[in-house]
Length: 331
Ligand code: BDP
Image 1: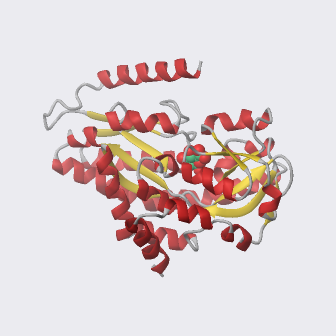
Image 2: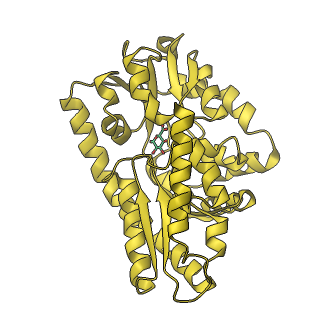
């Protein structure tokens, strides 16, 4: 059933691509509609940021280039959309770093537990040369890294009890994104990691296939996971950012001038995204509290201490060690 749905989506994607045949025709006046995917619903800050970027591009190309944002996972769950973007079936992808972790080693670093001291630290690193060097890594995989967006802090939530110490997580089944690093992170806390698509988590929680998951305030709220897993414990263990990538195939079809317009608009959409994000985090927190979520703060040190094996396993080669050291040294 799931396979069939994916196939149907792929066929639909192919048909829509054929309908935009003008793209790639090579003429300077050709109309281009870039298809961008996002699993989040309309109105979510990531979706709105890419729409904002599309408006900038439309203005700057006198309407020649547009972005059509397919929200709510209309083009598939994140793991599947990576391949489609690499093949150029999808032109742009707003996606979390975690699903790239297994493919692109450097993407593990900003997803690492407790690597950033604060949101300000994360923003400074991702906006600077370190962020640019990570964006460059995507090119080896048929993708062009355009920008990073915020994703706030991810914390654990579950249907059983508040988590105060790692011991409270012992034996819990916790959904993670499809990333070996996140599997290792959850295992290091004594819980059982279950990789699963984002879209399947609500029913997983409801049917008790899993006890919990981890995410930021806006995703905890927009998915209504708080209705079926009300204990939200502020471990804030990862600030794994969002990333906006473009298919290298689609990017190469644009003229150098248009490529520059796309790149600049992506970077400019970051400030807009952050404005929307900061407001949404507060609104989401208020909503889940009003909706009955039980929130607790935690003492983070025992969680930080438990992360040693994760660093040992995923920060092995010298390049990644240097990257971690550079991030930690950034004031
Ligand atoms: C959200 C990210 C989204 C991820 C999702 C997840 O914005 O890209 O897919 O978490 O946990 O915060 O799968």
